[in-house]
Amino acid sequence: MPVTVRILRHDEAAVLDNVADDVFDHAIHPRWCAEFFAHPRHHLAVALDGDLVVGMASGVHYVHPDKAPELWINEVAVAPTHHNLGIGRQLVATLVAHGEAIGCGEAWVLTSPDNEPAKRMYRAAGAIPHEELSVMFTYRMQPRRDDG
Image 1 (cartoon, rainbow, N blue to C red):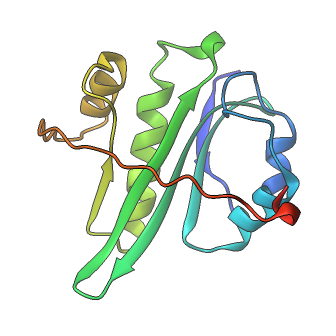
Image 2: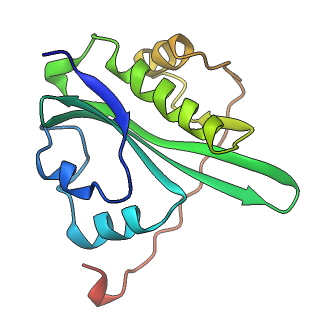
């Protein structure tokens, strides 16, 4: 059976009950999963091998007072068992097409300058690289005890 790639609807969180190793960084957390799917600006493309999730690309579309909606592609991952099959490219292309369909004027994604496999995949999915270096700053915050 071929791998299928599609956007999950907001009522399809249960699809994430069967995920291959190394698709997500951590186990699916029920609270965060419910919150993700409850928000209409969160989008998740999945690659399914039967009913097993073997890849995903997540994105958030947002608006700003001076810009049309944009799609930020947050994460892309494919299970090692399914690498080099074009699944990452399909996931990104599906997420970008979804962003365009909901009115986003641009989509963007970041990767490290030395991540050549990701850079090849984004180019293959139609992205135009902007090779300027950026510096990412991180703020570490203490979650409230009830945040899990």
